[in-house]
Image 1: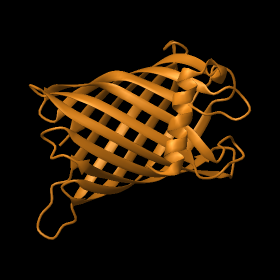
Image 2: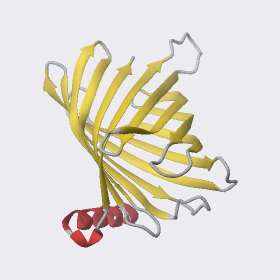
Image 3: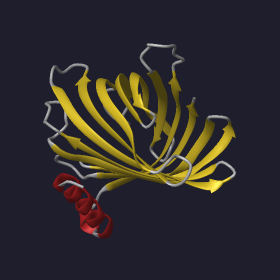
Image 4: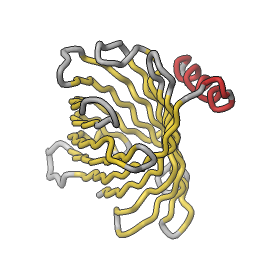
Length: 230
């Protein structure tokens, strides 16, 4: 873990223990559907991977749709455990007060296995670089994200899941982002099989968000994701 990640984690843990952080809190419901499919290929063809997801996030004690997101990407499978991809995200955010915002976000991503064979406890990494554009502003914000995920089989297809994802802004933009630590997401839950390659992931996510010139935010999110991997 590099110095920036250690500093962000230390600050987050300190805020959990210290009431002086005075972060605003909310309980939210995050729902998503995602798919990751290897494209059938013949001799000499590049091994392509198509990924897509859509997300709906309900804010204000899960009382209203505050944000929805659509993401798609096309990747190349370097080997059985590594995929490099290029994609695009559209995000619509509707605050309780203020104007609706529309964000366009090209991104580059690497997914890779860190340790394990996929049948026992396995650790997976995902590194993503995002170029963020907000409608109405010409300023581009660049953000790096590093996620680590642990899958631990429980038997009969059930899987215990834990993830940690650190977000760091690489620059400041006139529409809000400030260079430095942006947010940290910690998730714990369980994967429930439905059919071959199809399952539901359900659990709790703690999201700590740094904000400029106002109190930080801590969200307690119930997370439900329908996943298809083929």
